[in-house]
Length: 251
Image (cartoon, rainbow, N blue to C red; front, side, top):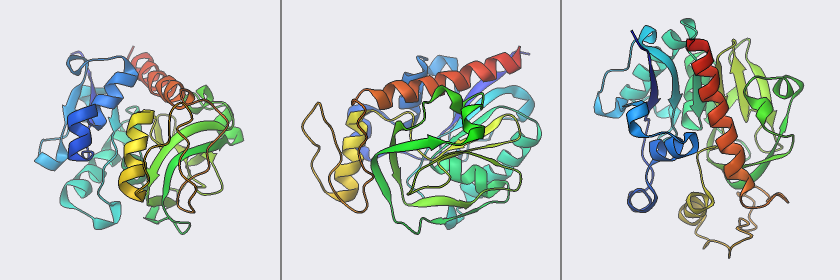
């Protein structure tokens, strides 16, 4: 039996943005250079059944506009499924909400970040574990990433290895075991998508290109000196490395 790669769609972006730029799963596919025919897209919000672990070669949990602390039925069901996936050692990557849900499902604590929301560009620094990690090591220390989150994984699950951090978010990435990762930032975002989130959430128009720097605000992460394209290239490298790790494990 040939195993599948799944994108677990945990939410949708703003309606107007989806019409113009696509949705979370489309952005993941674009960074992977894959089409919808290459993956199985599962929508727990629509009561679609989550795939059995033995049928999967790997899975990505998307972001969402919901909050893990709302304990929504579909989210709680997905948390139970995550525990099965991790136990079965199926490669798993959680992005933003998916990162938080992975932490929560495995015994961590999720809640509002005490430093407020993080929206815009940010730099993340790798821990020693991150620099040697099979996935996060594709990023340089001080990598530019794109962020949009209010809640965070406040406490990681027991045994989790912290991989990346910055002054605003101490748990920007972590690994649990040898094949489950969470990243709080959005490797699938583009500058256009990031602009939309900055404008929607903070009410500041996009900066003129090519700088695309987020506005000065206590709730917006500081811009790095990296060029506007670096966040896309690094996000693409991360997602493609995860795909390669999943395929290699399947072989």
